[in-house]
Image 1: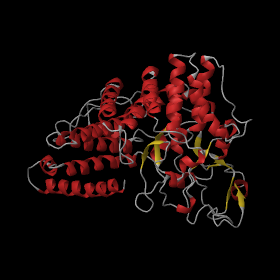
Image 2: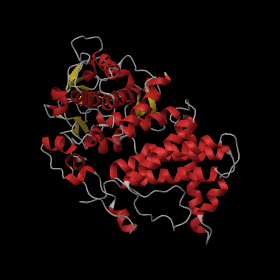
Image 3: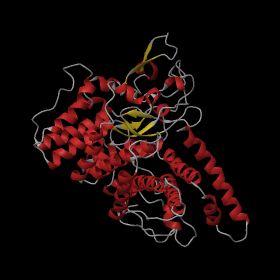
Image 4: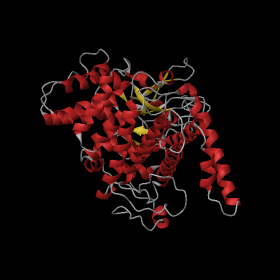
Length: 479
C-alpha cells in the first residue's frame, strides 16, 4: 500500500503542473496535457492511485460529523467548544462543501482513468476500468446518502460546457452505483493490494447499500457472497480490530490505509481525553496535546449493556502513559465534566502520528446485514440467529451472563435486537445516523435528547456556493 501513497503523492504535483501550464498557455485545454499523460498501464495505475487519494478526505473526522456526531451516541466533549453546530444541528447551508469538493474531485479523477484507459491496449485494462468505476460508485454513495440526488458525471470534465449539470434523482444515482459495483463484483479478483477495491469489497458495499435502500433480498444475496467466500472471520478479541498492529486483518474487508509519519489517522486523537490546564495538563494520555473533541453521549453510556465489548468501547479511566504512575479516573482529571471517553481507537504511543487504518467495512457488519435482511425475507429461518449470535458471543468474551444468545424472537423483536446490536458492535464507526434514518427513527431519537431538529434535516444541504455557481442545481427543501 505504500506504493499507493507514493504514486498518489506523485500524481497530485503532476496534475498541478499540468493545470499551471494550461493557465499560462493561451489556448489549449488542460485535457490535452492529461490525455498525453496516459500512455501505458503504469500511467493508468498512477491515475487510479490519484483517484484513491480522495478517500482520506472523507474518512476520519468527516465521517464522525455526518454519521456519528449528527446522531444520538456521540457528542462534543463538554470541556471543549468546537463543532457544536454539528451536535446541535445549527450548521449553515455550506456545511457539506468539503464533502462535495472531495467526492466530485475523486469522481472526476476516476472518470479520467476510465476515459483514457479505454483508449489504451494492455492485458489488465478491463480490471483497472472496473476498479475506477467502483471507486466512482463509492464517492457517489457518500454524496447521495448525505444530500440525495446530485449531478451525474460519467466522463471527465474536459471543457466547461459539461460542468453545470442539473441534479439527477436519488434513484438514478443509486442505479449508477449498483451498476458500477456489480461490474466490479464480477470482473475484479477477490484479492487485491490492501486499500484497493476487489470483488469482495464490491460485494460488501453492495450489501450495505442495498440494506440502506430497504432492498433486503439483494442485501442478503451480496452479504452471503462475502460470507460464503470463506475469506473472512471475526477476530477472537474485539479490541484487536482497532489496533494498528492488526491492520488489514481477517475481519477487515475494506480499510483506508494509514502510515504513521507519512499519512496519519486523526481519529484516535479526536477520541482521546482532551488536554487541559490542570494538574494533569496533558491528562497523561499521550506525550503531546490531543484535540479530544468527542465523547459518548449519556444515553449511549446508560444503554450499552455490560460486556467485554463495552469495556473495549468506552472507559472511565486509563493508565498513565509511562506505565508506572498508575490508573487515573476521568473524575480525577475532569471533575465529572467528561465521565467517559471512547477508548475503542486507542493508539496512545503514536501520539498524533497514528498509523491505525480507518475501517470502511468489516465482516461483523456483513454478518449483521445478513441477519437483518434474512429476518425480512424469511423470518422463520433460524440462520439469522447463527450470524447475530456470533457477534454476541465474541462481545461477551466468555462471561456467560453477558449478552446471552438470542432465540425465539418475533420478527419485530428481531428487528429491534439487530438494530441495537449494530449500535453497540459498530459504535462510532460511521453507521449510526444512517441506520436510524433508514429505519425512520432518526428524528424521534434526536428529539428525545432535547435537540431541535427539523424534518428536512434528514438530508444535508447542497452547498450554497455550488447552487450560486450552477443555476441548474436546486437546493434541498428547507435549506
